[in-house]
Image (cartoon, rainbow, N blue to C red; front, side, top):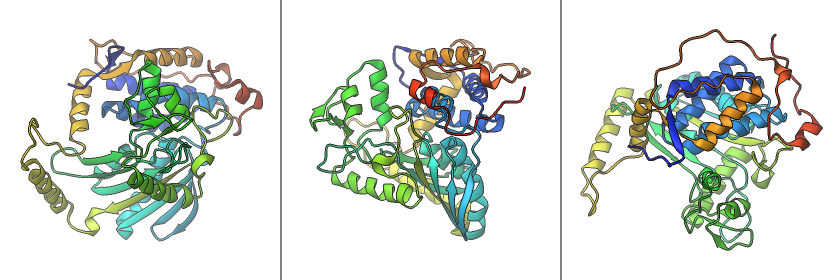
Length: 399
């Protein structure tokens, strides 16, 4: 059974996806894009990664309201050569623009065997493995990374320079779920520290330093200070490599120039992404590849176990089991996140439709009424950003 805190309750996956979609539409995200956005967020909760799921909806929509994210941005191709694309997200939602980038990469990878894209002027785009899993479902391998707001210090420093700069890849198998590798180059994903702060909990020793460079277990002090790199100098080197691929090569913001989605409510983030898509069929038959991966997994599981170990798992197996359970039982939702959803519904004029734990039936189809675009404001949106006005041209929602 997946673990959940005492302050959480469960809700049905379809209910959650529909509510997130309705809120995004009310915030002027086009319906099709809102569906993509909702699927990406809820998929993180389903896979047991709530730090990158619905809990982030409030800040995304606040930044839209403050004019810091353009909900209707078009993904632009700035340069192309063969199977290489240089893309500009034009300050759109990171999830939506990355999915559109994948749509462009797939036919290029089918043609060339490999296709690579960089994306600039983007946002935090959630769990990287979400995109890798989608590629694996099409018989492809996506190796992906992103930079992010400063959170991790270089080796020997006590000032944040790098984002947590994750690296991810997924590999299709014949087992019904992909092998999934997705890890931050920090010792822990920053979202875990944010979650601890929301709950008023302390963090484990060895995760972070405060502003003075001293070890801390205080979540707020850690967020003000810096997270430590994974594996010391090795994690530092890997973070630098991914900063070059995601930030330098893409033309995005670099290091401290990347805006914070929480702290900087007066400027865009300017995040960069790196996507490398391999068509397995260019190397061997996909069925043969899956068989060879399955054999590799069998060999791993056949290894002699350490004392006290009952089963050897491979990356992606635990999240697959969580997903099965969460589809059946509903996804755990923190009460603080549920309260944020209720407030968003109130602010945006959306009916709060989130089923109780004992009712996991999907919501009945209904006719949608389109909200008036100018009628709603967000509680808690930056007053500075509100005085400054939107940084992108306002869009009127059809009446």
